[in-house]
Length: 236
Ligand code: ADP
Ligand code: ADP
Image (cartoon, rainbow, N blue to C red; front, side, top):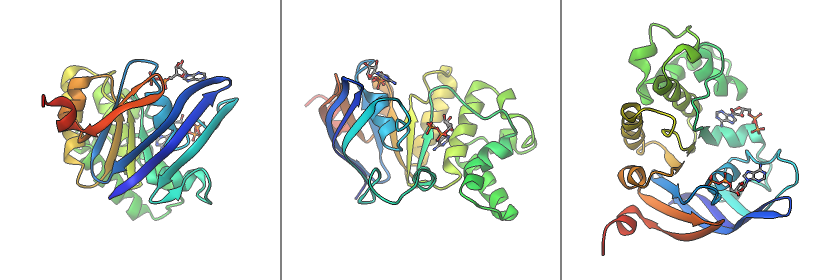
């Protein structure tokens, strides 16, 4: 079963066409790695999947992006509802400058969840899923930006998971981290595949071969090759 699907997605920044027509399916409960050289359009493509590009001047996007068979650019789905279904984790850990608790509760509050008990349960659940509960449970009111880089990135992962999204987009989530934090986050993502569908940009081929189930290789705004990670990385 596919959770998301891109059909002939083209994107231009002004006159410059950065994506030339990408068609790709994202199977449920798998991790898809988007790989390719710097500047090939990985991040641009990823950002289309939860409409993070919309506000850029002179941007033009065509084709279709389906989430559970509905076109995210041409439905009633507003951005708040879309981002409840499609979460995002960035390269630099970007916790907001307030407490761990309020960071993780952020998406729930934006989504209109008011029940304090529900929010508390979800915050705990998400911090546990992101494997950062033990390190934060006694410090939930501490400013999230006071934690280490790896811890901050886990808090950001918990923030993305708190709304129980269908899909989590990750834009080079470990490339700003030390090797140990990076390996721990890989481990965490692999353990969460039973619950979520991940789409991850990485420039690290070894990382893609370790954590992904499907690989899509982009070059100059085109999808050059895609397939199972096994087929892409193991010699025939
Ligand atoms: P990657 O993530 O693979 O490194 P990007 O998606 O960031 O590639 O960039 C793809 C191309 O689009 C690059 O040539 C980049 O310079 C260009 N680009 C990215 N963002 C913008 C923007 N906001 N305005 C104009 N050009 C952009
Ligand atoms: P944009 O101009 O990219 O649409 P938003 O107002 O939606 O920005 O979001 C503002 C900031 O909130 C983003 O720059 C990003 O740091 C963060 N953000 C946006 N979407 C998400 C998400 N799904 N999960 C977590 N943080 C998000």
